[in-house]
Amino acid sequence: MSRASSARPASARRMWPLYAAGFTTAFGAHGIAASLGSDTEGAVTSLLALGGLLALYDGAEVVLKPVFGTLADRIGARPVLLGGLVAFAAASALYAVVDSPGRLWAARLGQGAAASAFSPSAAALVARLNPAAGHGRAFGGYGFCKSVGYTLGPLLGGVLVRVGGLRLLFAVLAVLGAVVAVWAAAAVPVVAPLPRARQTVLDLARRLTDPAFLVPTSALAAATAALSAGVGFLPVSGRAAGLGPVATGAAVSALAACAAVVQPKAGRALDEGHLTARSGLTAGLLLAAAGLGCAMLPGLAGVLSAAALIGAGTGLITPLGFAALASSTPAERLGQTMGAAELGRELGDAGGPLLVAVVASWTTLTHGYAALGALLALGAALGPARRRGRGERRPRSG
Image (cartoon, rainbow, N blue to C red; front, side, top):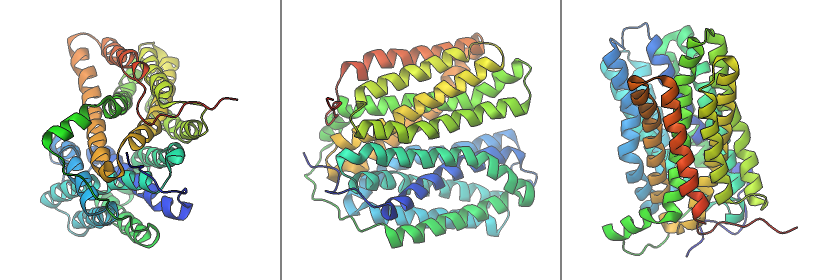
């Protein structure tokens, strides 16, 4: 099997533009999503329009990420990365230049399509430019920057909208996309596509149902499900306990901050042999499940402990899941694998809150947390704990 890496670790000069691309997609996704509801310029005309705009970005990613991941394998990840960043800047500028509801819809769709191109391409390049022994650190840094984007998006996005409306936020995103595109063009080396054997639909199905792909991807989807449910419903629990918006906002920020802090540490532990992907994914699922259990407790202590544990579990799973995928995937198929894994995360992003909401509508929000927590605990019992993925590194003996 080909190794999804080069012989030596990539320099920081090569990696930081890829990390910046991860920040861009996270900042753009959450910055605008959190700001659309506060639009006062008339572009968001109803709750139905708000829901459609929120779904448009994610819908484009669900459909297009596997497509662009496969394209990255065919023509090279770097041109798909650069094209996606340029398209993101252009789509953002579309609404920044002319304020109209139609342009807002077109811009949001364009941003989602563009992110579908440069997000899996950046992940594939992170794997290609680093040796297998450095995948943990590399994906830990990449995940850290995405978590920072998720954290700062709603905060800075809200400030920008307050100062200059949605058009200012889109203008900032246009500049950000253009700057990262230029930076990546200057610093990220050309990584030629590798020769690929012909792949039938049956071959693809076998690879995507292999436990080496399915286990880490399922863990990534479960982590994203817990994260999204926490972001969406912990503020509801806080308000029900009589907490103000500052306290509930702090809880959501703590969730994202814990995820950001844990990811580099988890990646480093994997590379240094202190942690295996199997044990790390299992521990991450159990931590996130425990966090959902804490969300069932009343008051500020329950909300904050839930946020910390869900964030820590997500931060543990994300770099280990991507590192396991990179280590078990032929280099010539990395884009396709990363695109498919990102699709799994998008499904978790939508499915987690939906499951909690459906169960809560029948019973209570407490039961909604319990249902998702039980699903994650079951995944920990049936998934990573029962299968050692290919390419997993055992801890070094003392």
